[in-house]
Image (cartoon, rainbow, N blue to C red; front, top):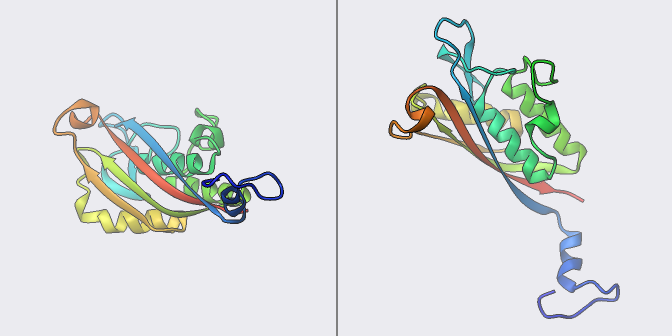
Amino acid sequence: MMDGRMNHDGMGMLDDLNASLPMPRIGQGFDAHRFAPEDSARPLWLACLKWDGTGIEGDSDGDVAAHALIDALLAAAGLGDIGTLFGVGAGSSGAGKHGAEMLRTTVETLAAHGCRPISASVVVIARRPRFSARREEAAQALSEAVGCPVSVTATTTDGMGFTGSGEGIAAIANALVLKLL
């Protein structure tokens, strides 16, 4: 209520307007995993794509880009985080699942709560794999899994920290979700 006027219910006029419009909400997510041992047969999944090289440790496929995006979507919808939705550990409902499958389940959960993803962005932080050659493919795979445009960028930490030393991969994501009435 910007001008202090009240409507007949005692609500401000701005509150009345907001109550009748879908509300966009933003959420942020983060995930990080270490690489599995070099002699591991674990495949590397990142941004819903299979890559050459040793995979990531985790109960699911370890796709940090998908996991960070799940956290961002759930945060925007006010529905907790990846652990809230899928649980934690080898016996969780997310164990053994691929990031794309988990993203689709997340979007279904949002829809059941009157929310729809509008757009998202993911930043992958790693020394490997080299991301630039598959950036568009990664953006397309994530966009298809979520049902909205997802931009993807990648960066290094110039040798600093666990991502800089090559011990693992991290990702940060932001998502815009429309909360429908």
